[in-house]
Every structure is written in C-alpha cells, then in structure tokens.
Length: 569
Ligand code: FES
Figure 1: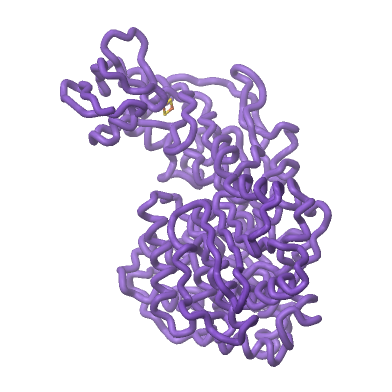
Figure 2: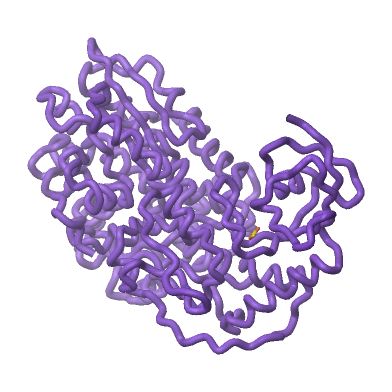
C-alpha cells in the first residue's frame, strides 16, 4: 500500500513494509551506513544510519525501522550529525592508526566516513588488548584489530554461503568476530570463498597475499615464469586500469605480462576446455551405468570443500576432474614446457583467479597442484601498478603464447551456469556424434541463484541444474535427499552469479558491474568461431599427443583427484 510521508519537509511516497532507509535511497537522500547490507537481515548494530523522527525521543536506525504513515523524518540535523560523528570517533578509538600502510587505504569505508563526517583527529583513545592476526588459512587473513563489529561477514557467511564459519565471540567490550573454537579460520567449516572479504568495510579480512612471491620468482633467473588468467579477469579490470571500451584487453594483458617478465601467458579457459572434455566423458559413463548421479561439478573449490567437510555422504557424486587452473598448470608443465625445451620443474606457474578458494586449492595436498602461486584479480592490479605498466599507452603485440587457443565454452566458466552449458554442448557430441542444434542454452543464462532445465540428448532427457550462492544448494540437496531423481548434472558455484563475483575480484560488486562482466562473457560466446571444447584444435592436439582420450589412464592420473575423507588443510 502506498502512502505519503515527510522527509526534510518534502512529501515522499512510501510503501508499507519498506524500511526508512529504502525510502531515503529511492528519494535521492543518502545517509551513511556501515552494518547495513542490501538484501540481508538488518542488525541495526552500528547506528550510523540514525534519523530523527518527529514524536520519538531517541534517534532511530533507518536501516531496520519500518516506515509508517505518520512519519516526519529529518536526516541531517545537528543532533543526527553529532551522533554519527561520535559513533565514528568511538570506532576510531579502537582502530589501529596504520592507514598509511593498510591495503584498504583509499577504499576503506571507515576512512571515508571519517572524512565525510569531518572527523580528522583522534578524540578518544581506548586501550584494546592486543589481538592476534589469524594467518593460518592459506586463502584468507583475519585481523581482529581492524574489525569494527559490523557483522556483515557473519551474515554473508550465514545467509549467502550457508556455512556460518564465523561468529561473535566474547561479551561486552571483549566481544570480537572470531571462530567458535577460537583457533582460526582453517579449523572451521570456512570454504575460503572470500565473500566475507568483499563485504568487510575495513581491512579486517583480506586475501592471504602471494604476490611478493610472484615478484621474487620473476627475478629468479633459474625459473621460467608463466602466468594463466581466468576469463573473469579481463572482463573485470578494464575500468580499473584505464582501458577504453573496444580495446582487445586479452592481447594487452598478454603484452603487459610479457613486459613484466612472464615467458608465456595462458588463458585458463583452455584448461576449462579440457575440464569439459573430462567431465562430459565422466557423465556419459555415469549415465550409461546409472551410478553416482547426479554428477556434481568440481570446478569450484569452495563447493568441493563444502561437500568434503559438511556432506561427505555425497562425495561420490562429485566429478573427479581437476579445476581449469589445476589442469592448465599440469598440462603446461607436462606438455608445453618440454615443447619449448624447458624442464617442467623450472616452470613457475602463476594463476590469476577471481577467487580466494583457488589459493587453498593450489596448496591442498589432494589437488596435486602444479600451480606455484595464485594471486587474485585485486593482487594482479597491485602488481601491475608496482611493476609500472601503463595500459593507457601500451600497444598490443604478438606474444610467445598468442596461439594459446580456447573455445568460448571455456570462457563461459566465469558466469554461473556457464560450465554446465559448455559440458552439455560436448556431452551431446560425445553421446550422439552430432552437434547441439543451438549451442546457447537460455535456461542457464541470467541472474537467478537456481536455474534448471532438461535437454534431449538422443532419446534421453538430461536434467540439469545450476546453483550459485552456496546457501542455495541446500534446498536442492534436500530435494535430492527426499528422492528427487530427474537430475543428471548439477553445477554449483559458491559465489552468487559465479566467479565474476568471486571473493578475489575488485570491490565493485554492484549489480550493474556484475551484469556487465556476465554480458562480456556471453558476448564472447556469441561472436567466437570455436564455441565447443571438442572443436578446440589445441585440445585435440593434447589428446592426440599426450592423453589419448578423455578419462584415459593418463588423464585420470594427471587430471583427476582422489578425494580425501577430510580435505587436508
Ligand atoms: Fe543502520 Fe548500521 S547501518 S544501524
């Protein structure tokens, strides 16, 4: 029901059930927020968004208070501004004074708020007991000293990912965000997806960086440094590095990486093509025998960890095929390096991934990884700045690895539903010897957290589902547990909308930005000549010269995983 309220003496329409903050945002009035997260349960804990409501003595938090028909609201009175300023002053009283060295400086919400509210000196000084930085996780570092207890990380871990690895521990002024067992993230059900980092307003959570190791490897003359990129990287950084629309960013990236000192530059979509070949063959075999269906994709390490930690009874349904980054690392050292006259052990393989869980995957024993360092998209941006590459003047050049071919099916892995689309295209070919009449599967496109459909392959209706946002997997798992048996393959990506929105991506997670990354990947698929993995000539070369055929003994040895009972940390 629509009604009219007053905000700062102006008439504004509101709807029953909306919060005051929603109405303010729609009316072009901005109030500062910290604990608020769009789409999540409001906690009203930071109170930065307070407003004055005529007739109510105390200030009320606009993010959690519902709007009422009688309300006359004031958003920026001296009383409100003073309250907000005091909140920020108190938060700063507990905050380390190390902005100069902090990774988030310039992008820190607390810093921005202090500036916005004209807080430019320390008013209060609390003596917080020194706290230990949690560095035991290979993917995520946690510094409780920088935490302002907004609880955004807790809500995302709970509501979006569904693992509840972190919580408030302690009481009163001793409370902090930690793990129930207080031993560190590595000892919890944390799947290392990094979505907590994406919502942290300060630098209390960040990726465990490995980019100094990469710089060191670049300067080691004994090593042959090689870099691979997830297809999500070029579609996410153009704005950040000042590349104008229409420029061929992948060629520019190759050129830049070669200038920095990498000997070869690979697109991980090539590894995704091999992943497609292997998973499609696995699925074809399972369909034939009727065993271990539905097949769960294994390209998202956060999902694999979730199954191993939380639902080990479904472990047998996971595809055993390694992820694209692991496959690219393996094939490079085994095939391309010897071809270039380089012993595999001299190769230092760096992956640039949109994901912090890929860091964990690369050091996890069961992966038998040939990837030597994983950096996130954010770390890449830092490395580019540090090593002095100016993309605005850089001219694209032919590079040693310009002939590194991938299909657009491999590129689609970056968006939720894309891996499945690529696998179904190749499954159709492997089972019938014919191409799918229409490669594009519209049911797998778009922004929904759960996409489902059926596709006829020969005389069999293959049921499929794609889930993104790990918490969305729970209801489907329950349906399967309750006897649902019409699905043959399920793709699960821990992050909403897939890797384009991964925990290692630039901090702009606005819907506009995620949609534009998704569109860029889909546009690639619309315009490329090679749209299926089985038509990639480089894939054919690898099978004819090295692996034989998908799921051969050698590909099982090199490209598949035997899952441990509990994933080793
Ligand atoms: Fe409203 Fe924190 S943003 S209480």
